[in-house]
Every structure is written in structure tokens, then in C-alpha cells.
Length: 481
Image (cartoon, rainbow, N blue to C red; front, side):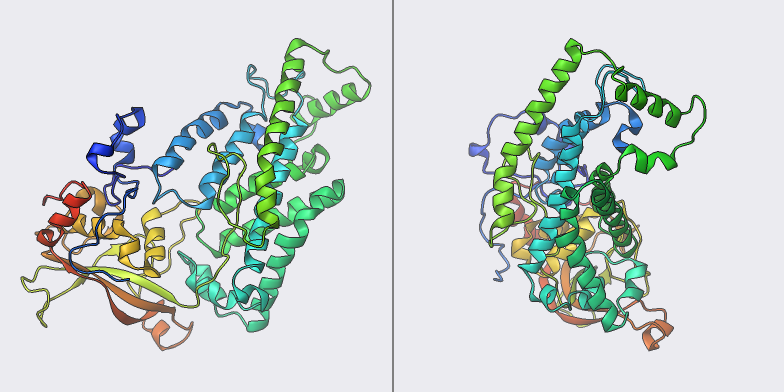
């Protein structure tokens, strides 16, 4: 889930005397060295203060089981990096996947283990909550979702725009209104198709898959949209998907049809202890999901709905939502370094650090990374409309840049001090970014973006300035490499 050894986000830590005995997860330091923000509220910095049917393709539950088991601790150890809604969605999808395929067989079509209806309805319940939760959080949230203007801003201000977003941003106003209305229809109306019979359920699945494909094309939302396609597939039955498989004697489709004919004649597999055990497990699963869904449903009905949260420690039935509010302007934090001895000297040459995907260099084409994800770039998007006091990790990153830390720098696209001594000072500058107009003057100059400086994000910092700050938080003090 993104835990890594790159040390740009500090490891969690309350004060040493309050720290419990280390567990196995604590000793797995290479997996968590940069993943958590401290629980404690340390003193302000010394320089001042400003205020998810195709899961069966593998025929084994092992990957789902291992993924769910490994994902749970990973989701907890990465408070800063793994706090996105798709982390809990991945856990819930993987949990249901554990029960989808039989455990003790390698057969592609195990005769005595039909697909669990409870699991299939579990996936349908999941996609219902994902879409309805996203729709309700929008309609209850930002006013632009109600006056249909949100798409006027979304493509430019989304976390990490892609090249398609650059052109979609300049669509006519009526197209943006159509996009917003379509979003409301797909998230607030279409989810109920699941409960209106087979045909409408299939329509729901087709529309949601198409919707996610559109989102994949127009944005860089990590694996979220790919993952959301998975529960949507539960809306399709064998008759719907049969055309995707080769037919003929002995082929998979022919084998499935024969099994279905036998079951229709009552000549299916006899009832065994295993089938009774599976039925018991499925019943228990259904009861568990229903019980854990109670607070989730109450949250959906509440005018104070919260999104991307869980009401149980295992995070297997969760609340979902996305883009409840839309920013009207895009701001960016640009990290810069200088080798000048005097940071305030007018002739100090400040050089920009370039991230792998987020906007920086005006002439760099927006990236295309989905289903992959640059978590640090995503965090920088959040930091840009907050203050550095709310994002202590960015000061930790600045300290690493001051030491030319190789692991932290591996998360960046360009280090202006590569092959040179580390910078003496690092600062954060705040800019407003806008897409250039296709065919306009800036685009003719090769610029995808235009920007205007808003002011400092955090002041110039040296390693000496950060010594006390790092010590007070029990972070390793960065030494030059």
C-alpha cells in the first residue's frame, strides 16, 4: 500500500518514555520509515507560526486473502501517505474476494462450489455505497455541484491533471453542465438500478464501468477507478458475459452450460459437509456485512455525512465519497534551494526541485500515470491549500533536501544540486497555476501552464535552523551525503 523506505515523511512517534514495546510491525522499519505523522502535538517550529465475476479468473482466494491481511496493517502504518479513500475500498474489495472462490481446489470450474450469492450481493452492495456516497457528499457539499458549475474548475484543479484534462478544461460551458448532470444521474439515480431486476442491474453495471473508463481517461486518480470497476462486474451474469468467452466442445463456455443444465435437472453435486460449511460461512458473512452496514447506512442518511471513513477497526464495510468540494484555483508549493551563503541576498540563485508528476516546470506536459500513483505529489496538492504547520512532513522533506538525501531525492524527478554540494538553504514558494490556452501565446511558447507568485509558503531554512525542530520530534537529524 505504498509503505517504503524513502525517508521524506517522518515515522510516527510520541515521546520516547510513552512509546510501547516494539512489535513485529515496529521492527519492520524499512517498510515504515517515512509513513506516519506524529500522534503528539509538538511545539511550533522555531522560525515562526502561521496560522475493486472476474476475481474468479485466478481461481484461488489466496491473493485476495494475502492482500487483505497484508493491507490491514499497511493501511494503519501510513497515516500520511495511505489516507486516501481507495485504501479502505481496497481492503473491503479484497475481504469479499476471500470468500468468492473455493479454498481447497485448483479447478477452474469446481462442481461442488457454486459462486456465493452472498458474496455477489456483497459486491453489489459495495458499488451501491461507493456511488451513492459519492453523489450524496457532492450534493450536500460544495454549491457548485448544485448550480452545475463544478466541472468548470475540476480538470484544472484536480490533484494531478493529465494531458486530456488540459483540453477538456476548455470545453464549452454547456458541456461542463452536461458533465455535472451526468455525474449526478450516475451517482444518485443509477445505483438503485441494482434492486430493480436483472436487466436494470446489468444496465447499472454497464453504466458504471463506462463511467469509470471516462474518469480514467480524464484524470490521474491512482487505481481508484480501476478498483471501482471490480464490484461493478458483479452486476453481470453468465448470460451477459458469455459472449466474451470462446464456445465449442470442451471450451470453458460449453462446460459452464453443461453444469447449469445439470443443476437445472437437479443433477448437481450432492450435499456434503463441505457445502454445509460453506453455507454456514456465507450466512455468517452476510450477517457480519449487514451488521457492520448499520452505521454506514445511518451515515448516508445523515445531513452530516462523512466520507472515506470506517466505523470498525478492520475497515471491511466503509463509507465512501469523493470531491465533496472543488477548489476554484490551483495553487502549488514549489520547493527551491540555493547554494548562496545569504538566503536574503538579492543575487541569490534559487533553483527549483521538480516532482515526478505534479505541476512545476511550465513547459512540462502533464503526466499520465493511472493506475499508478505518486503519493508525494498527491500530498503536495493537499499542502498547497493548507499551511506548512498542518503538513509537518514537508519540513521533514526540506531537511532531507538540505542533506541531499538519496532516498528522498529518488521520489523527485530532478535535483538541481545533483553532483554538487547540498544546498545551504531550502524554501517553499506559493504559486497560483492555470492551464495555458490551447493555441494561445503561452502554448505557442511550449508552456502548458502559466503561474503567478502568491508569496512564501515557508521561509528559507538551513540545517542548523532545523536541528532543534528535528530533535523535538525525535526525527533523525539529516546528515549530508
